[in-house]
Length: 164
Image 1 (spheres, rainbow, N blue to C red):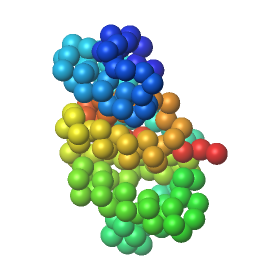
Image 2: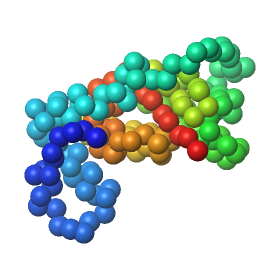
Image 3: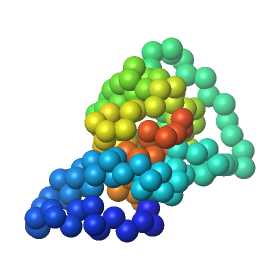
């Protein structure tokens, strides 16, 4: 997706290796090359830019009957949380993201969640962790975890997509 050949960054990684290990190695080495990091960031930023987001023909405003972020997970219409157990997990993620990143849910379109973020995760471990969480909620986001990590540390909006 990034459109940049990064093969040289991981040419010394012994194969076979787990994808997760390969992606983290690639991400760590990308962080060490500022020019390459900037090129990749420019190509993956769409996941953190609101002009990429779905825009419906009409909307309904829903005011949640609670100010508790954790409780709001049960009121959100999200295809990725079809059961009470998944809703509980979503509620925990919403609460954690609010504490850590000041992430505020601004829209829910059935298969999509959209957030405004007050504190970006720092490149490195913070962005890597946030990217793993976002990818778990958004399996239909066609980016690798390392690409999401690059994007999250550069944007103030997050897009989650989980469809049937």
